[in-house]
Length: 286
Image: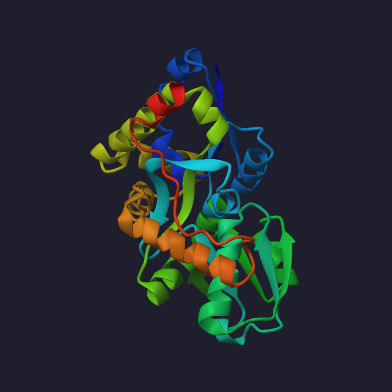
């Protein structure tokens, strides 16, 4: 059997992928497909991927067909640095304003709407979806959202607008970590090829462990050359993220789903998380 694994094309998920032995995995039947979160979400929903690192919102929309690989996520308890909201006005003055949303993510878009509705009582705004071009977004709107490497690069530039970090806002109002991405698997794929998924999960954990062993120094040096910014910046960026789906992260994720359902962004309430556990592959294989 073979599986196709989606890989988020942003740096925040790279600790899980950076140190993988891809040649070994290819021999074992694992193929990777890299794309932005919104595209991976769609491909997973259309069953064009066996599993993927995906936006948390995508998992919440398809919990009947998907399960989570344990201990893997991208989260923050406070600043995330790569989900930034720029506004000409303070947040509480955005009612009726034009707000540009990025076309590359679902979790961040709904997180912004939830924050504005739940914590700032902004229930009406003129939302529009645009490609992540900060110059055009600023020219055409009163506020705009950037995520991923687009947000990181924009953060290095001076701005005369208010700049808000959505991870920081979420934590300030909830006291909970915000989970941006999880690792979801098609239940059918896991039933058919549980042993391969178990081995791949082990490799993801090992890559994360290797990245953390040198305090992300190797990755920081690499991305400094590839994307700009200092090595110190990238180390601080990775240090600020949580890469383990622990109890607090699960609590934060379920509260995000609760609010997404409350405001009509999810069709069904998500009361619990279906997380695969060691030994599940034995059950499925036999």
